[in-house]
Length: 159
Image (cartoon, rainbow, N blue to C red):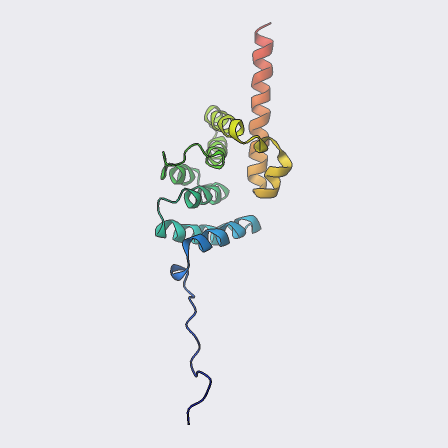
């Protein structure tokens, strides 16, 4: 007599390689927001392997690499899809934060100004804090402070 119930467990995809890259990217971003950068990076690396030209994945991977202070890797991730959507504000701010952390303020200011020109929300610290890490929030505040310092110095120099 055969049982009406299967005797084996169904095959659910357990290895991350079997999961949709979009699903991996979404899950990775939740890990980023939760501060688990190691898991976020693993998931994003897997998503990038499956879709190497996906700008969203390379940009999000750069955000995670910035948290790990892997600034050269972050800039390389951003350059991996250069020209496909280079003008996206998120990418420009990621580049700005990576450059700021790498002690390259001129490049950071240039990239941040390009981003805020097309997406002024980057000027709102509450918006940034809600969507990004404390490191990103602090870096953006420092970039804004530097921009204001330079503006005041320029005004004072023209008098």
